[in-house]
Image 1 (tube, rainbow, N blue to C red):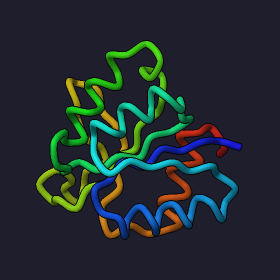
Image 2 (image 1 turned 30 degrees about the vertical axis):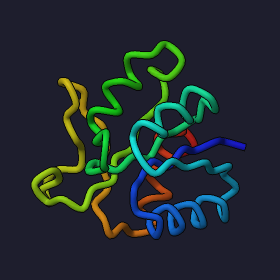
Image 3 (image 1 turned 180 degrees about the vertical axis):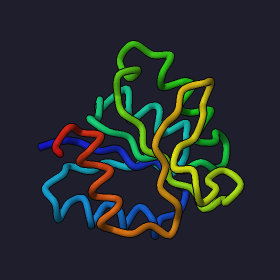
Image 4 (image 1 turned 45 degrees about the horizontal axis):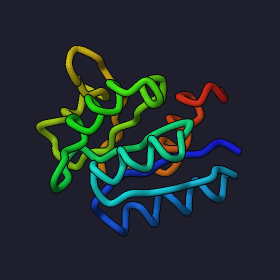
Length: 125
C-alpha cells in the first residue's frame, strides 16, 4: 500500500483528502504545518507528499526546499495544493521552487483530478 503524507493547516482539507485517498487504498499520514511535515516525511518516508502553499511557520515552498535537501526525502514526488490565485493562475498548473516545477491543484479541488494526479505521480497510470 502506497503511503501519502498530507501537509496542510486546514483540518477540513486534510479530512477530505485523507478520506478520498483511503477509499482508494492509500495509507495516509498528515501534518498541520511545514515543520511537522518535514519531520513526518523523514520518519515515515512516504511515496508522495501533498502540501499546501500557504501555512504558518513554514510555507509549502520553503518546506519543499528543505525536503529536497535531505537525501532521505529528495526523491519523493510533490503535489502542491493552493487557494491562492496568484500562485496558480488558471492557465498554470505547477509551482516553481528554485527552478524546479511541481504540479499543483487549486483549492477547492475536484476529487477525480486529485486522484488522477496522485496516480500519475505514483506511476500508477
